Image (tube, rainbow, N blue to C red; front, side, top):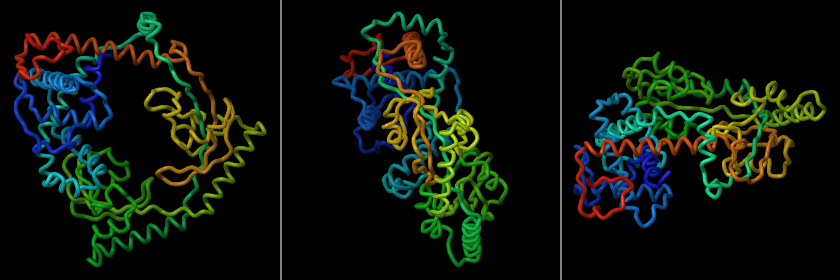
Length: 446
């Protein structure tokens, strides 16, 4: 895939917004695609974004980004021509997701508002049209490549057409499985945590304490604690089902009874509900796990390890019968690589804890029970190194998914190039003189 298309596709799916206050830039019109105006500030902000994301665009960076913005503008213009619509609910959902992301990056809602000198609602209003246009562009791009499906015979033909010198070297990859045992929270600790939250709820309702101060001081939710437990508009399904169920069963302004989710115990105050969306604030308390329960988890995993060693169970059978990891237990503990779409990982893709555990293992061996840490707390795991491949040139037998992805990317690139070539003939295009000397991938100058 050529550099222009790689960067263009990446930019369209990234979070290009809130990276810089555009009103600090010297602005002006530097191009027109259909009825879409290209601004100087847009080029500058995307150059900054590319640098922040680690892209080395080389000496022709400005020309490359300018062509990328032309492509994006053509997508947005054609989306209007094709009457592509994005619902307000979809736009608001995307806005909320991006605002939440940047709140986490900058250190909270108040800091984001201070950075812009505007309220969250004003920020959302300012960027609403930008997000809507970019979502339309993304949908338009999806239409261009939606019909591309590469068959196995086409993958083989693609691979055979590659210059042998251009076939990439694939580093060592591993396939790992694990059995996890998580310490259990005692019923007495659950009861104590629930009672504490019920007491706080009573005091909040009586005015003895405030919801927001209690959340700031004691809530175990790092994402909302700094904002007094508040979260902005979310769509049903964003949080766990138990949380949604409470949000849609209480009245606006009401503080819920204490309820339990997989994360712990909550109380929720509902501010407002609109269709499938709602906003409010909550306090989360996570019951503490006693160290004796952590030790019990180790003893249990020691016993499981012995059952495997003595041949009572295979590793895979033990995983299915005993492991607490719901996502892997029915696959014999096999961990899947969400990025690669297979069970193979490059070493740098592995969870750091697992990487350290398997470092001294040989293929087919498994570790002793090892204490690990997740967002939910401490747990013990046994990790098996099922497979380890040697560095090699990519081939169809071992690296089919990699070659399929490469073939698909090439096909999509060609489809996008043909689409640009076709649409640019029937679209009004005006470039700024400063960019007329750029060596574009496409023939934009007619």
